[in-house]
Image 1 (cartoon, one colour):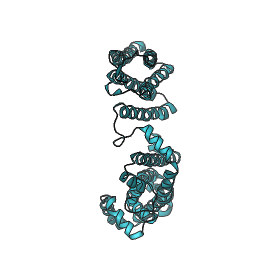
Image 2 (tube, rainbow, N blue to C red):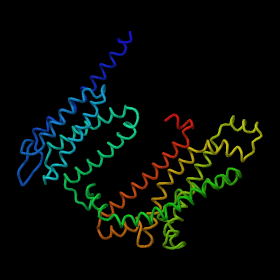
Image 3 (cartoon, rainbow, N blue to C red):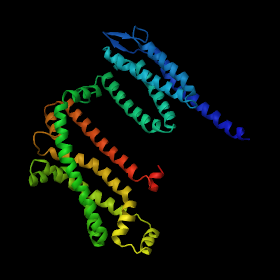
Length: 382
């Protein structure tokens, strides 16, 4: 009886996998009839002395091995090797100096490679452990970067509009000392100080507002009002009040991070259930003991939510504030000055540093949240 129930499902799964492989193989085979690109005025085909046949063989082998991917782990990793081989082809051709803008065979081939990548990520996402949590997001991000590289260089997009990731990485390496000084001024000096002051003040005022209810009723409308104030409006005012050094940037960050932390803390403090509060009162626990033993632990997910939101707001606020006045160093200063000089490579390198910094800051807080709130029901459900 169990075989009669499960066999139709297995048959449909195998059929879906086969149809997926057919959908991948068809554009790859159709690409054989179209050119790869133009080199020295001549149209280059698949078998015109290039390494393209080797890449095509690798993809065909990966598609054949992919028939067992839903059932065996080695099939998924074989498909992944085929994806890597497929995406190396356009990079190899670009390094050889081919004009890929007319290489419709290559673009059709990349459609098949993208479908293959989509399929192998779907298989790997069903595996437990680090494969699902690390490999799949890494493959997705790497695929976006390689696709960006191929599209920009293949269609010869001007670097002033959008440089390829390789050019941004080269600018990052060439200007590492300058970018480090900017990072130290913006992040280590302004962002960290403003973040600690803004989040700390929001937390302390939330505790006070929880104790004094009318204070919460007066501050929450102000929080909604403050969230609607654009940072470009308060940044020049803070520069005039506190000067061009880190104090004005920290002041902008405090304004941007204070109310999100206040609102999330108040929401977390009100998250305790009535039966829990009644139990604490039955133990003759006062406000302070109830706050420390019950309400603050239950509020931890809300507190971390506010901290994670503020981690990105603080970096954005510091960079925007530096547009309106700063010492001759800082990420915002670097972006504004290099845009005026049309040095877009350094601008994109600075943006990359800011993005990596914000992602790292957010990720560190997420890891800390997972460690400290592993006991919380909201974390156990993940």
